[in-house]
Image (cartoon, rainbow, N blue to C red; front, side):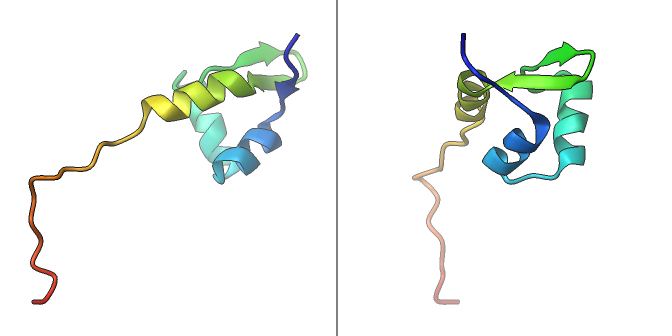
Length: 67
């Protein structure tokens, strides 16, 4: 079985605060598992969740950076 990550592991992985991850779990935005002693995460599921949030950049916009 895949090792389960604790909340602090996910915070380190995603570089966000604990409160943010708890908000995501409460809103059921991030895949997680509830246990009597806290929530746990599968790293592969978190990785997949992050990849689904990728924002594609627009190639058709030209910016005038010279002002």
